[in-house]
Image (cartoon, rainbow, N blue to C red; front, side, top):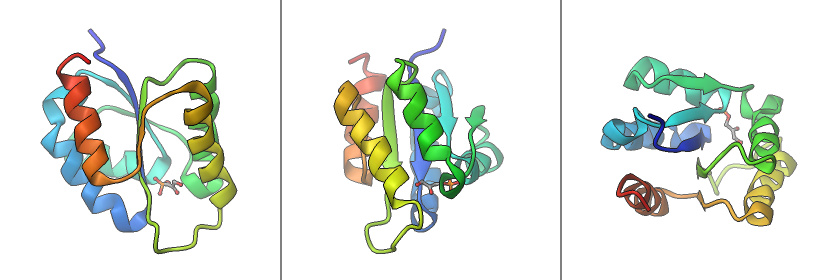
Amino acid sequence: MTACRIALISHDKKKDDMVALAREFLDFLGRCQICATGTTGGRLQREVGLVVESMLSGPLGGDLQIGARLAVGGVDAVVFLRDPMTPQPHEPDINALVRACDVHDIPCATNLASARLLLKQLQSGG
Ligand SMILES: O=C(CO)COP(=O)(O)O
């Protein structure tokens, strides 16, 4: 049974953190339905062994695809490890996704510490 529908997204300098986070929560995430932006999803599949529905890469519209799914009720939680130190060419798409989370009241963790809190809560059934 699917525990939760979770979107996993990470900027390049945060991808190692995302892989480590996914390993840490592998038992739980393995029971979830996971979607991810393209490059993040590829690494999670290859390096962690998670089954992931990979969307387009973020700069090519992946954030928007996830935002669109979320807007129609298809995502329960988002872990989006953003890189606050590097300008992103698709900043408007990133803002649109985070805004969609706020509009639809979907939990969105944008750093490792909050991601751990969110995943712990979800895995305990909350
Ligand atoms: O850019 C991203 C999110 O804004 C992430 O996209 P990738 O996972 O394809 O690198």
